[in-house]
Amino acid sequence: MSSSKKNLSEHQDIPDASEFKIHIAVSDWNEEITHTLLKGAIDTLVSAGMTEEGITVVHVPGSFELPIAAKTLLSSKASDAVICLGCVIKGDTRHDEYINQAVATGLTQLSVLSGKPVIFGVLTVENEQQAVDRAGGKHGNKGIEAAVTAIKMVDMQKGINKPKSSIGF
Image 1: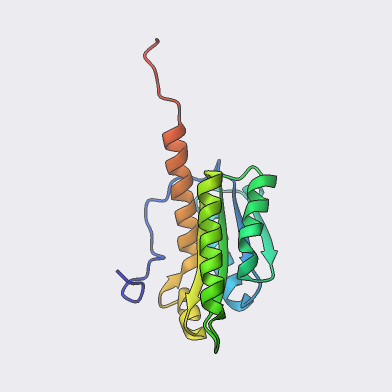
Image 2 (image 1 turned 60 degrees about the vertical axis):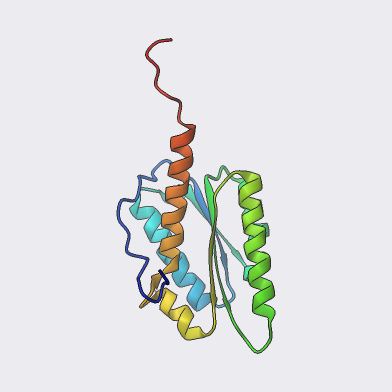
């Protein structure tokens, strides 16, 4: 179902994240949008039990820089996941296609190679109104959705990696 038909920021059953370390890389390009996404993500992580000590936020100039920020966070911090937040608005040229493809590919590769969830929270929109609609507007806040996704992915990994109880042998 497309996001134009549903506000996906309304969520239920978020696992307890009090023991998680989830970090966020946020683009400062289109900061009125991206910082709204950031607030939604942080509020969601805190409401799931995370403390400020478990959350690290780094700022980068634009969305293109998100993959290297995510890699840096994964290698320098004890991260369970990294949320990447950005906003690329289509303009008069095809730059948005190149940026979006490069960022999506970079974050996907990083996630697979690191074995850690790297969440794509980049708005790829046609115009500023679509961005506003997805950053707290009629389609919710995609920062909230990115945080919920990160929590659920970390919970899934920890559940699979949890030692099985034994009956004594």
